[in-house]
Image (cartoon, rainbow, N blue to C red):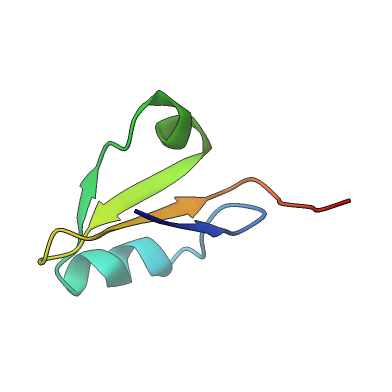
Length: 57
């Protein structure tokens, strides 16, 4: 699973673009479902788009 921190919702066109490219929305568990959207690509790799921010401060 490859989490990507977006610090907000994904761009309006990003989700449909991932779906057109063969991605399928799937669940990655309650935590990730609450804070983002998860896609499985045709090879089964998962990409999580996390709407939360990340800081090392």
